[in-house]
Image (tube, rainbow, N blue to C red; front, side, top):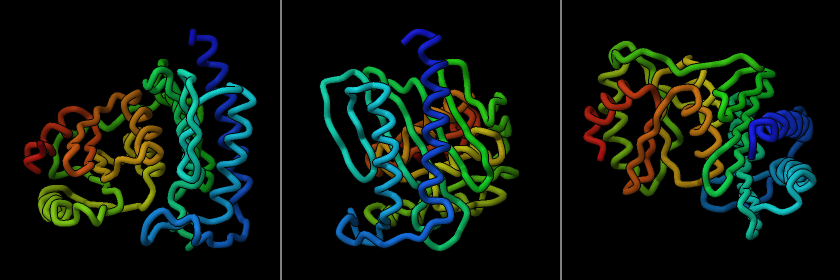
Length: 252
């Protein structure tokens, strides 16, 4: 895509993502137990309806693309892929905890070109493209703090498959960082890191809808991401603090 196409598409996606939040904000939900993907997962009718809305609008733009949503996937031979998490932080949403949002990422030939993340309770839209990362149209950057003793680190929800490793990480992090936080939403965590409100983010996942929208936002805000594929762990932040955290955690 050329520059003008990226700018136009970013604007369209921002409108779609913001509009999608009207489907679930302030609405009653019904638990969809038959849609649960694994134990302790949360899926509601509003997750499904929101994703269906985004899918419909996206296909009006692209007509043909790979659609990779948390609640549904549709393959194509197109070079364009759309990653969607309709309500990231469904558990929080269900329990009236305000840490949740909607996130979308567009890939061209498997490389991210646009991300849009929306936090409806803050009325803040974050987007990233080749021109940088932005919060409500204003350029943002990751924190430049590299002193771990005065830094705040966010953790994603624990993965039961690697709980021992993650408990070891938690023990080390709590002794060396000023604060350790768990918000329960990768959408919220990624936005906080990209705008410099926190200094490091560690997420345990291999799901593209959890990872890719925020990862691209963080990278376009000047951050880096390092992955340990053995335990599906990704560390993100500015390069200096990521390198220090990797050394501290003996992260390979």
